[in-house]
Each structure stands twice: as structure tokens, then as C-alpha cells.
View: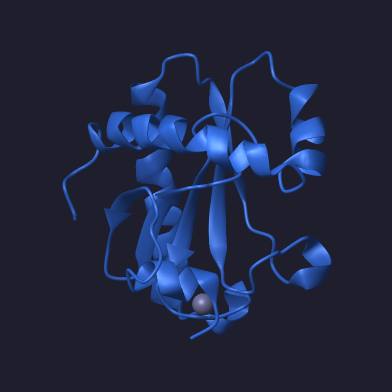
Amino acid sequence: MSCIFCQINQGALPAHALEVTEHTHAIMDKFPLSPGHIIVLSKTHASTVSALTSDERAALLDAGHRLSGALKKADDRIKDVHFLINDGPKANQHVPHVHLHIIPRYGWDLAKLPYRFMTRFANPLNYLLAEKRLSSWAVKIRNHLPNTM
Ligand SMILES: [Zn+2]
């Protein structure tokens, strides 16, 4: 099992988990493009959306709906979100396992996003500094979700 997201799904690697359903597992992104960035992992290992079943595809968007609602309740500065799936390596997919990004937008952050996109993996301090913040975000978001874990 070399896929990092399969390892997270099976509990072999730690993550700040938010919600678990039959087909999905939502966690905080360790390299957030903006504060509160969530990723929803498919429980099935597949590199593209078209390799999932119809139920699995629907479950990803249903989870996105619930989690974006919880995000907005967790922080009223969040105005809207991006739903983003990088569907294959030529589309910037870094881990070949289907995942839906939920990227919060704050209405004042347009200039920051391209910079974060280019640098979020480059500085190891980003990961270290983010751990405490990710834990805090996970608690705030879980307060607005049914308990599934
Ligand atoms: Zn996988």
C-alpha cells in the first residue's frame, strides 16, 4: 500500500479527520491554499473520477455540500468556496487518488492564492506551522457536522 491517501483512509497515517461516510473520508489539507482548506478522499483507490462508481461520485459532491456548509458556519468570514478535482497528473493531481478540494474564499484573498499555489509544498515550515492551526480548524468544522467518527 504505497498510496498516501489509502494509508490515511486505513488509519496508517495521521490526519485531521472531519467526517467518514460509506464512500468518503474528509480531512484537513496539510498544505492549505487558504485557511480551512478541506480535502474529501474517495475511500476507493482510483486515480480518476471516471474510475469511480456513480454512487462514489455522488458521495463526493454530497460530502462537499455538507462540509462547505459546516465551513461557513465555523467561520463567518468564509464567503464562498471552490470545489476542485484535479483529475489526473496533467491536471496537477499530486496524489493519484481521487480527492475533492474545498478551498475557502474570504473575499480579500485573490492575490494570495497564486502565491500559495506555487509555494505550498516548497517550504517545510508551512507543514510544521500549520499543524496546530489544522487541529483547531478540524474542531471548529466538526462542531457543525453530524458525528460520523
Ligand atoms: Zn489510494
